[in-house]
Length: 266
Image (cartoon, rainbow, N blue to C red; front, side):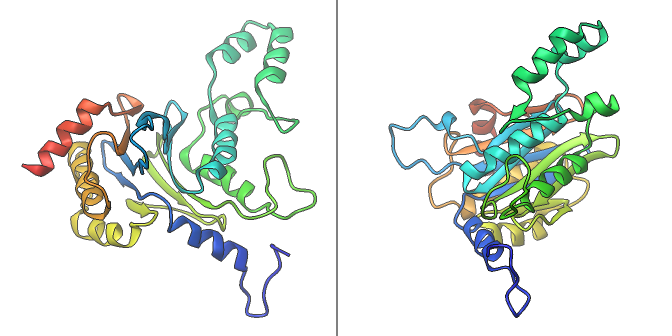
């Protein structure tokens, strides 16, 4: 079976899933004292494609974002799980605090069901925003449930063929975590995943320093993507987001990306 060890102690399906990520778009994350920068290449195969529809960076909560590489369809279940567990919904809080439990119950059943299972958010349980590591840990547990007969909601019959970079800010400051299909996750200062990850990671070793500003990190990720991408980099074929202490999670618009690209060309 997919979750059976070989005589050599290997899980081949997990290894194959990790190999699948090497076919995906290159994604890079850099942590700085001011926040985190995430950047992912967009592979636009047709001029008729709307670039904005090819999202590789998604918002998890107001203080957490996620970049991905590999089979993007597989990431939807993982991202949905992270969102349900972490998001602080203003309507939910308002109804809970006002004692409107009837509407609260309807809201829960209306918006908090995934594959027939009702999830209670971290905020509802602990009355606090979820940390970046806790979000990563929750998603990692789902990635480990492949092939189980009694697996929970969202689990698949094979490993998820996607790697994720979780970036956010909590009480520990800026945090960047990498999660792979084996369920293994670890904290990083800078990390590259996807088809160009080997070259990008070696560049990060040379260019990264702990006192980077977010502007320097932005220029660095675009410089590296320019080197590893097959197409000429522009504001349409790259997606960039940031998580900072003042703005929380936000995506950079085309003008901001174009300005940074012009800076690396000058």
